[in-house]
Length: 226
Image (cartoon, rainbow, N blue to C red; front, side, top):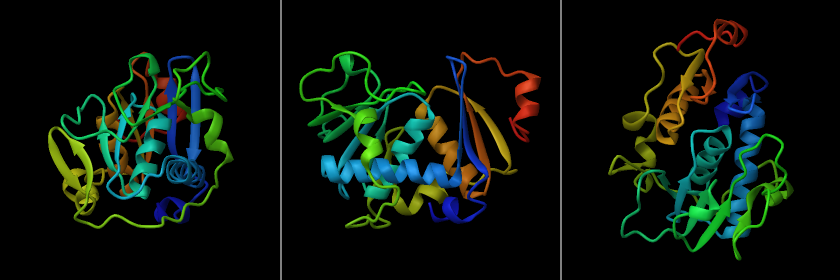
């Protein structure tokens, strides 16, 4: 996160192409701000702390990546859909499908539309509206407590990934950092790629599977690796 803030902070680090003709570009500074707002929301409103189980029932999306970064800043144990926590209690679940959300102590509805300022339509009783609340939180996050290198940061493919292993054993820097294009709707695949790309100083162009990757798109985004 410090590298995103300090290493050419106005350069694009995450560009999203969505199925509704969406194009969202986040610089390192803006990406850090969104992750900080989400982390402050998690701690201030939902009492997230090191060890809290956070399930992201979300597709690959720019907001989902912000949630992952925010969860790790809070020290949470992150579960990525479609991974199932099994017997582990889910304390917080963030979902884009509240009508079919997995059971959790607290469930947050995450609207994925580019212009959504709140969830469109009624939400089940007790469910928290992320879009309606997150903008009120600060752009800088200072954790009350930090996870240790030995704490579990992520459950992926049935394996526990510690905080110390996130940027080493789990995700390795891209061989050719630059503008890397990835087309997927799988959050785990996007998270793993993003960590490696950002660790190497690169930039991710994340494309929904329904979006056609044309030569014009590749050229306009200056893609170096696909």
